[in-house]
Length: 357
Image (cartoon, rainbow, N blue to C red):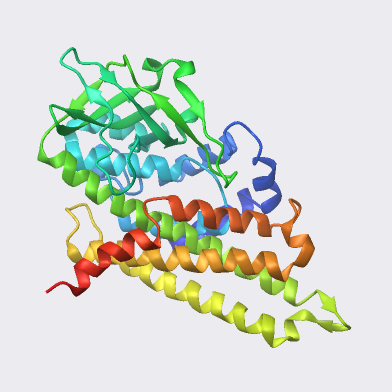
């Protein structure tokens, strides 16, 4: 039911022309569309009802993100959902005010990456004895529209979660990134001199971060799988209408077989994604959940890369142009690979989880 509702929302609110109209805007999304999503309760769909959420669990967000991916719709929902998960898992109801704001439409984001990568500690920002932060974060998703930042920092060598209000950051502290996927936005943020509104410490922070990164992989995989489905539909429509040498190009086996491969890969990825949705919850993620999240990301990345590449090739010279939607698909594939670890990153970790005795 969630998938049907979300698909209907995307169909009505975000046809491809509307998505294209936002590609070169400052935010990459329409404010009215975001507000409509908030009114549907999606901002808090994965958070407990005790903090204003829907109480449906994080798995319930999977069909929503699959539908959003199917529309290539760029909004800050992924950033907000993951920020909510990190704060909830690290602080629980002691952060109820922050979580309530996210459920009500405030945009949240996680400031995680610095000079390291997904395999590093990413604690380049320091929380000093005077209570202020020093350092910056790179590629902070939706930073320009965020109302609050969940900043991973170090205090005495230990990870802490610092919650920062947007109004505590100078405008010139944000430097916009140019991303290959123009439906997405990110910026580098310098937090030097900023005093967090609240700081959470303890073992729960590291555990929450680990789980949130896995959930990021799962939700990104759901979005990517939806985009692969959209790409497949675009390909099949073209194969049924484009003629070459007096025949529909869809009649040639050289095009049929890769198209079937895309379909099989997409269904394979969906199976992994929805299995992941059934094994993740509010509690700490166990090994089965970790395996599911990692496998979903591997499958989704690979089918999207293949689908985007084939879409460009099947459309010929037109496929390389800005006017062809193929460019949107191949750009989404390149973006998705960089988010929450690519296939190589996750396979390396799956090997130790599945093969070590």
